[in-house]
Amino acid sequence: MTARFLFPFLAAFLLASCDSPDEPSAVSLAQGYPALWQVENADGETEAWLYGTIHALPADVAWRSAEFEKVAGQADFLVVEAAGLDDTAGLAALFGRISADEPPQQGLVARLDPALRDTFKEFADEKDLSVAALDGLESWAAALAIARAASTGDTRNGIDRILIDEFADEPIGELEGPERQLAIFDDLPEAEQRDLLNAVVEEATLGDEGVQALAVAWKSGDLDTLEARSRQGMLSDPELREALLVERNRYWAAQLDMLLAQEKRPLIAVGAAHLVGPDGLPAFLEARGYVVRRIQ
Image 1 (cartoon, rainbow, N blue to C red):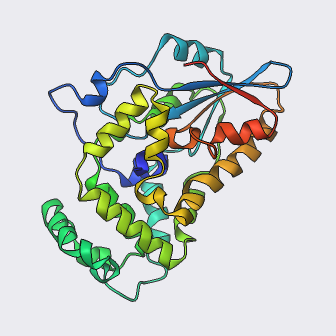
Image 2 (image 1 turned 135 degrees about the horizontal axis):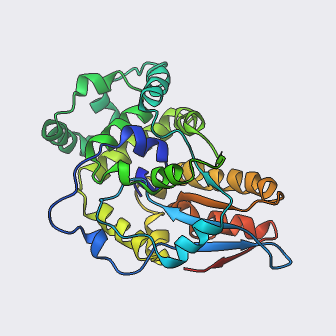
Image 3 (image 1 turned 45 degrees about the vertical axis):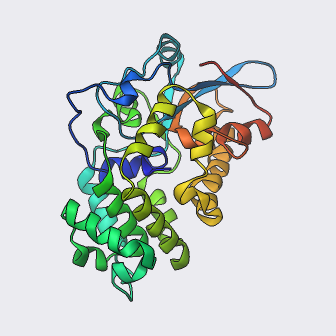
């Protein structure tokens, strides 16, 4: 499971943009539309809508449906994981402040699993990555820099960024913000940071086929595939899954429970990985007494 489904901050700052290819992308050819849910209270009254997003996408993907347009028109405001995604200078400064404040005791290659070292060196040469520069970064920060080098898609077409622009005249709620998102990584124990680093390197050196398949599943609303993929890669590690996904969903549900007590109804747009399975955000909201019904 790649960062483009988990952290919009990473897509905005750490994931590189690239031009869309001349040929139609696999995502653009996928049938159907991304999943959309309606959140109702115990009396059956609509309180909000949930929409699963992707944080980087080719420009040729037609993801807007008539049902989505209807919901976007009814929503009073937008809630996202992190706003201010256009402030790349501020995001870069934030990353710079904390990415090396505890200098690592070993170079990057020494922190990798031995089986990954040769393939990483080849990857670094191919992408013109400065291994010397990565040596000075904490393991989590090096992992994100490698994810940037491996990324495809265009972050300017990330659904979060598009919706933030469209709701610019309304208040925009923020579930975390970039500083809290980076702190999640920075607070990981070194052992877990290295698990993250190795998982990112392994995924990066496998190419983009898995990312494409994941984006196709998002576009077509294939929740079974999204859930299965949300248990692979970095999220197959129980501690990383808890920190990067489950605990965040639990925290968000508590925030939304207070937010939904007000009269205005939000469109809540978060990474698609957060909306699937028994520890997804819909499940946590249902545990708090809401009815969460898929409408697309």
